[in-house]
Amino acid sequence: MESEFWKLAPPGVSIHTSRIKLVEVTAEALKEMVKEVTRAAEELATAEVDVIVFGCTTGSLLEGIEWENRLRESIESKVGIKTVTTAQAVVEALRKLKAKKIVVATPYIDELNEREKKFLEENGFKVLKIKGLGIIKNSEIGKQEPWVAYRLAKEVFQKEADAVFISCTNFRTIEIIEALEQDLERPVVSSNTASFWYALRSIGITTKIEGYGKLLARH
Image (cartoon, rainbow, N blue to C red; front, top):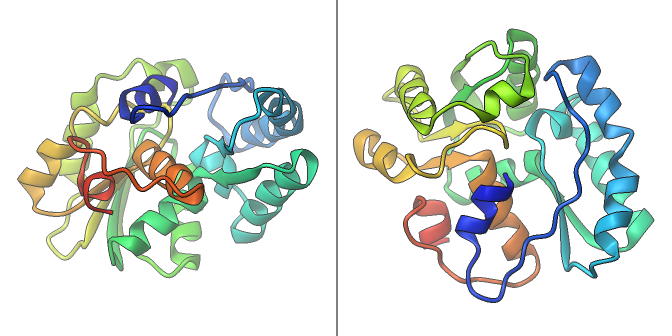
């Protein structure tokens, strides 16, 4: 997420990070990770940032809509800084694109795919297909080349889909989003493009960012 955010950042926007430990991408490990959110947010607050992004897709949707709301509100109440989560950003991005029927590509195990599908459907989307790579080790997800996300997205694509969502903030995507949009003739959103788009818009930055898909370039 950090390297992709830096590539996306328009002039005048800086990226500051605080890390939370996550070795394996499982439901149990994600619940443990969330316990460190307050510490990380307090560190970021010392940089006087304008917005905080909780940058983990499954970590922010793990137990549904109320989980995501509580997570975001707990950060904002602690540090007094506007906060967005990746799960929230993805929902807002898909709504902005007027997508109702979607397909989802992930690096996750089946249990997390099921939770993600449920969350998206609770937010009003019809998930036509979701498929993961079954990777548990977080660092292994980060080592996947962009073409892996490209091929997976093409595998899950359905003609009835209004949009394609590539999930996971640790999954390299931005290099292949434009090519996918041209091939599939549908908007393509990743966890990172949605998170960055929504973070900027939430603090009034409306700069259009070219080269990484319709969401950032047109909205």
